[in-house]
Image (cartoon, rainbow, N blue to C red; front, side, top):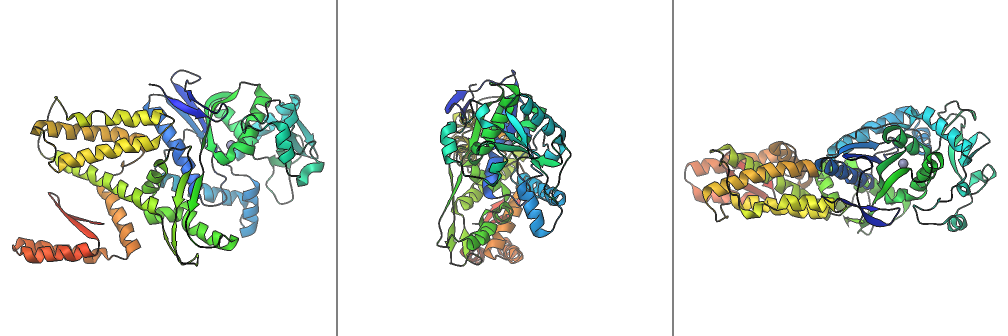
Length: 506
Ligand SMILES: [Zn+2]
């Protein structure tokens, strides 16, 4: 086993060696809970869930920490806008976040700390940084002094002088010694949530929480830090500065990972703020996308591209009014078909193996031997889910070929191969977070979503199928075929199985 991970700091793919043999600590920045998740946030959640699952499958004892930012400017501003208490708003969107990541098939992290539970440790870290000479108090705020940390800028690859020339002049300049210095602690403004501190009432700056929570749950040094590529600067640069400023060079994350952007294309709707806002709700709010296509297809779609690469979220917009234009996501529709195919395969396989006796030990078809290894090697190569899905789909095709009677092999070999595939599918399914639900339940929910989207009346289809089966029973095959053709014209495909007639929306 040779696990390779791309490290943002050294800009290289490295051979991964954990700090402590057999254990891995991951810290990934979690959401600021002021609104529903958007599709880009969802991609990050799935990327780190895959990492978590694969490292566990490789036998590591993984501690995965994902924080919740429950006090922040965005939360305070949003709460003021809609007249809600900031803590209530944060709690509400924490619940919504959990609903969405569950639908995406993400496992619960080992720890999910909240900023408001770590205030005491945040104040202690500010004090330590002041004592170490890399931070200073000013007008009730505390700032990190970037010029006092020589390696500042190393993560984002920007030397300090370059960063300084690009820095915008901010409102707080009179309180700061240098424009790039950033707030560790902010003095309370009227009406904002605040906590007592040695510098007066205030609240934490954005970056310090992650330094504190990573150390609290993973120690001063740990294996993998993660987040979206948009977090490299300033957030991760500043997290790194704080932790190194407190504990010394060589501490904090040993490998830095970042998932890529989501590029969206298509459509002739103007990119004005107002129309983008409406479009955002319809096209980028995860909840809306899940209601339309399901959570698992969205997960699958994210996994079609290795996590570091940009992912094309192509949108076909038919119409000019963002509120009423028909939206289509070809990538998601394809992912839906792939997920349905996987569940149909699992169902067929289960039905087939439910009859007859187990084949016992012996040879299996050689095609069934290598795919699970290839899937895991794909994930070993910097969690390349695209490679893993290729192996997964190959195996699904093989299972269907055997179920269709198209594999030229003795009966016991065919049976044994199906048994082997069923076993390996469970391993792969657990590792990928795909096709793990009960097949019929998933397929029925999927069909209901498709019917709703295409305006198909499921009860009417069921009644038509009853009529067809009556015709067949009376050996009126012409009538039965005519009914099948009528349904096919409406994109309804029917399948006669040992468990009865089933149907799907094609
Ligand atoms: Zn963070």
